[in-house]
Amino acid sequence: MAHAVLACGRFRLELGRPLVMGVVNVTPDSFSDGGQYLDPAKAIARARRLIEEGADLLDVGGESSRPGAQGVSADEELRRILPVLRDLRSAPVPVAVDTVKPDVMRAALAEGAAMINDIGALRAPGAVEVVAASDAGVCLMHMQGEPRSMQQSPSYRDVAAEVRAFLEQRAAAAEAAGIARERIVIDPGFGFGKKPAHNLELLRRLGEIASLGYPVLAGLSRKSTLGAITGRPPLEREAASVAAALLAVEGGARIVRVHDVAATKDALAVWSAVRAGVPGNAT
Ligand code: HH2
Image (cartoon, rainbow, N blue to C red; front, side, top):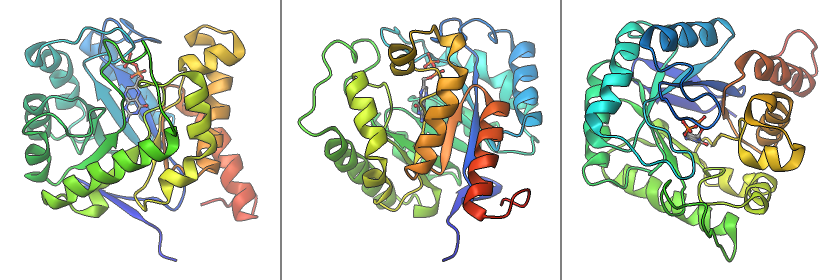
């Protein structure tokens, strides 16, 4: 079977092996690394470091979506991310921008962003049109509620079935608006309006999401479910995050969104080698 491909801007990413998306949070308040990379020079250095560590793509965000986050204006978001995007314009890997705002999407695409990563799955008025008018890839993520209140009382009758139905509907809306299928990635949105039990069930049943036929992106890195399991604070969750990334890939994810790129790459190299049956020659 031919390997799936993700078309995003000037890139075509082969999805025959799991890909690693490195997180660059240009924010003062992200849950695990808030404030560390708010200075553009520090964010750029971080991005370059993640590329050196083997990131297959980057995700640059200027607004935290942690539970309880208040949100920032489009102007402030752009002030944070544009210097980083400008510097990465000719980066060897695609740069995604993590935003829910059509104005931010438009400006980011004009600065060379190759992908829009939208935790709101292009539900903001005008968002689908902005992406459709570009050649960028898009990640459509499931979230119940909104960051300010999403962890207050998440509830589902069947979390995997509901997330699957939502993603199927949002992907159909994107395709209907003219976004080609090979530009679309779907994401169950671990931690977005979900209790630990919901996240674990989604991870166990990730194959049901993958069965929609779009590449699945999974973001479990450093998240609080891993803290609930290990009792560790965010910056001590690297091993747990690597384990979760491996489980996601085993469950059918094609892209994992992580803070700790080098460790995740090593773990996935082992996974790929076992899969390929040829040590040292994993593809
Ligand atoms: N998780 C976060 C942010 N964006 N995008 C996708 N597609 N999937 C995710 O799971 C996801 C995401 C939250 O992580 P982080 O960026 O580290 O934190 P914050 O939102 O506090 O900046």
